[in-house]
Image 1: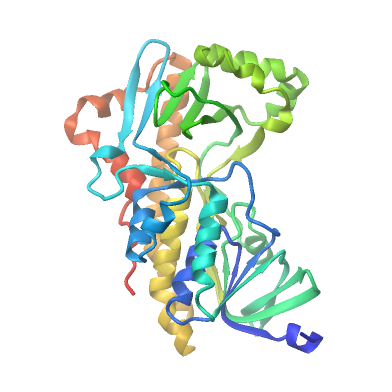
Image 2 (image 1 turned 90 degrees about the vertical axis):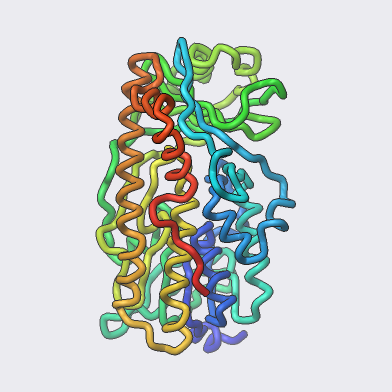
Length: 402
């Protein structure tokens, strides 16, 4: 390919970021005959401790696309419940086994495998192109319209011209920053330490939240190991590191005594990943020629693990609205506004719910008991299925229309 060809790559839609939102969006557009170029900054999809929970609404989309059975052939686990355990008693928060779905559980598939699966499916369409190692540096703007991006790739500087550019590049979105779209915070910030410890076969299944002494620890069953998320006060990580890994081991053992027989396996801070927990959303997801979806538009709190679900539903709604105008060259600003209109209220409501849950959990942690809200839900049958329904499908779940 010569330099002139590189500088004049043309596509209907350029998607920046091959996370769940970007990959699914690319597949949905490609199968409708829209030409799609998907740019991924990294050279592979192997990123540790990324979200890997596929809720029922995502699995139902996979079924509609004829992909569910093949997807479930990949190594995965299934979570059927979420519970909170305090010092003296526990309460069920969500029971997914009661969902009216062929997928009454949370499917846990490593993010890398899911993205590889979706992009390999998209490669079946000749109008799809995936570029790895493409680090976007600028938005191309002409006459007030975004018409593509410039990026550094393996062969140097390249540009892609597109009718629509989609920012699906995550919570630290480069596209969002280049466009000058500023997110507003929707929940108090905290930090999260992620790490793994072995799981014994006779231990609890599902997701267990342990609370006490002002701390919250989540344990997600990954069959042979626990994926552990330990919530710590914002900014406290440097002091914790200075105190040594033993301080973390001691805090974990105090909160979850049954881990005392294996906490010694956590030997170094390099085995932990620090994640900033800070939910936010941008007031407007779009500009002429540009649309944000997924975490680029709204960063979700980890409570309920709904980030992938809402990102994929953004992709579904966007594909429903944008496929036809992209193919005909009739894309207008009102189409982009419609995508946000469809997804904005469900996003706002779930973020509000997450803030409520977060406050309840921290209050329960200080009191060393499950939250009054969790107890109320467990005791009243009519409320019992609401959390699992909300987590699994959200409000007004997006469904594929074409």
